[in-house]
Picture 1 (cartoon, helix red, strand yellow):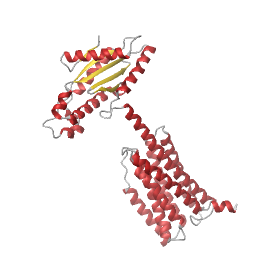
Picture 2: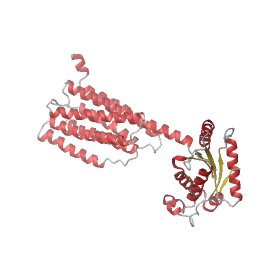
Picture 3: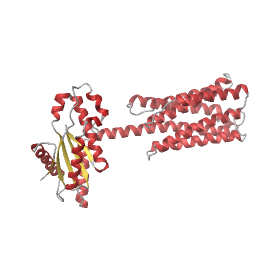
Picture 4: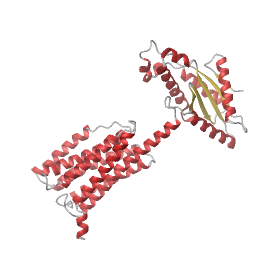
Length: 398
């Protein structure tokens, strides 16, 4: 028993926990160097474990350095590490994260810790003060992930670990209120050792959860990039054709309807020649944004090539497809003033370009034996007929 106790003394547990956290910080550091800036929070998730490691060195130096350093400073550094973990999660999840208010709380925490260390020495009071602050932090951190809840492994892992941290910190505070806290963090008691082991494990899994979340985000971004056009955000030609094949197969099995809309932006070369390619790119992005708002969840839009787009309308017959096409045509005609987020793109132009018009060709599913190539050919022919009849109109395939 004495050999086990010596292995599990608090100083050893604290140092092991710090080293494990530091190793995971290196993992996140190298992830940050290779991941795009769109994956937010990695800087804070790196700083958190590094500060935790620094705090473990200060805690482990208890008795070798002044108590102000090993108690007040050590706890403040540890709490600041928790702040960076929380703000990192905020930035990763797209919330506005700031350390300012929490840092002010940390300074007030330091004042309270100093009071109960030097003015009125009271270890249980210090413990209650610190565990109250970190429990609040863990509860807020948990609520953040619950607001962004999903079935992803990383999200569930982070939520579970934060709940465990809040429970462990809360129970430690309760033990202090009940007079079971002992006389100091270096007490070699089962309750103290149990808390340190639990905290070390949850802190380690918190960093692992951050790595899993960052990896999941990168995988999702790579999948998005593989299926979406980088300029407009519409599906790539390959992705939209794959969806069309799947929907056509479903139609032929179930007898349901579907329609394809071929959409060609009118006189787009003239926009590029008059205003330049940057403005032309902005016009394409605007056109896609407007069409996607109309389609919503009921359709899919892909960039077929250049200024030509293909919309898939599952479950739509000819009349419904024509109604959708007219909605898309009218959406494109709205003045640019309604889309101020693009105004800076052509701010230096002599005048903004007029809204683009488009020619539409509709090909509805004809039933058994229909192939995707046949539908695309009919839709393309209808587009050419629309252009020949004056553009900015909707035509059905024969």
